[in-house]
Length: 604
Image 1 (cartoon, one colour):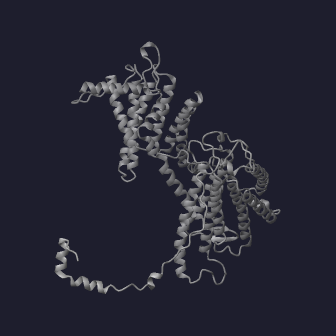
Image 2 (cartoon, rainbow, N blue to C red; image 1 turned 30 degrees about the vertical axis):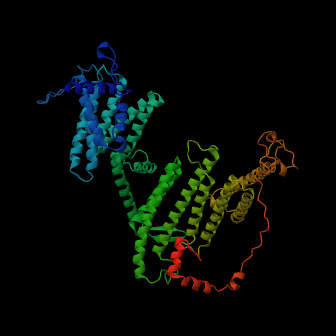
Image 3 (cartoon, one colour; image 1 turned 180 degrees about the horizontal axis):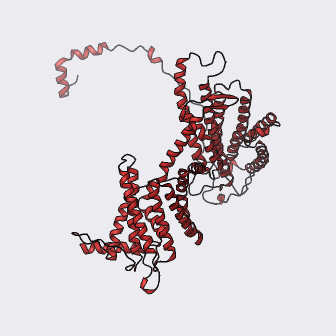
């Protein structure tokens, strides 16, 4: 049984070694050739296949332990037996197979994965942080040993560089955890430089892994620079966090703490905000932090490269805004208990806290409008470029989806007009009315598009005219103030599109009408009427010369006929029947004698 297990382990290890980039035996050092090991590729593939895709460090550590055991068996490099441990070290003299390098690499990976597992557990058990540092030191020790072995002439140049980068990465992680920012930054910079040189020296496919590692290291370098004293690094870190790039693993928790601390410091100096000509004091810390981070998030939204990143940033702003509004509502409840009226009797204005609530509500509704407008523009592009039929059962974009988005936008605009403190603001109300007209025009346009799809030409034409009516109202109200409404969709472009759609709609309606009124071919008899009912219409019907010819309708149809009159026999009620009493008495007199006579046949 032991021999079978050993042979199975050897076969499994050989399969792993035969994989591309898995560190298989490439050449023997004694023949003058060099050994090579794809260190970064091996690490990434092993991590993705054994738990790291879901952040399961314990599973990956178990895989490293099992692979170490298999490697030692296949290389006959055991550490003693069951009863006694005998330590062995990989030296340059025995370096005849690159699996010896893989042995050191798996040792380092096992120690690193254990450290990352302890880091997750240290959130609730701080004492484990000491064990975490110990495991990172162990990983650094193995990384340095791998780098020393790769300095041999038996190892190729690429493996030497990768070993140096891997050792520098582990050293940087250790210094980062110990908050030795200068040393950590130096190690990470060395690692980044090596990977950038490797990426530039190979093809694009091979350079993908190196560039990914560079992207992972960059936030750590900026964080170290910030802690050293570079204040500009903070802005870069926040932008990277908003864009969702790089800030993962060891850095994520520290970065969130740093950003919250920085905003809290800035919020301490923020006492008021000005909106629509009125200065509002801000005393709630959560509101201050939200307002300070709003400008950064807006700039990140404008710089977002794809729709998915924009959607995530919009959701982040809306979530933070809801929390800020909730904190203001709680303060409003306290204020309303102290005051009987919402309006200030002396100033005739809405209270500062209520006006702050209106300001935050305005931010929330405006952000929701921008998000829905971004989604609408993405759907419009999809409508223009999508194939006419659905592919692989996927749901394609439809005008109905856009109608729903514009309905939500109009609902948000209606809520904006009802915000307390803005009822008397004529310019604000006029701006909302103008935006409502623009979005009504777009909503009406896509309703017309949905009618075109079902060939309801007259309804679509009327809706297109309604779109032009809304557009003319918008042009009449804006006049020379177009610069103030740059954030609105282009109404002039909509007018051009509607005019083009009207012409195509009229042409489609004409073609559709000609198709419906087209005469039936004389060789066709679509209604399948019998010959007797179509004597006036010429039609070549081959079925007339067959045995199943329909000459007359058979069976014949039913025809209505008058019913027979109904007679009711009522005379019986007036008939007097004769009396039968005399016959009944005579039968009674016969008695027993008559009965006997009747039995024997004697009748009188």
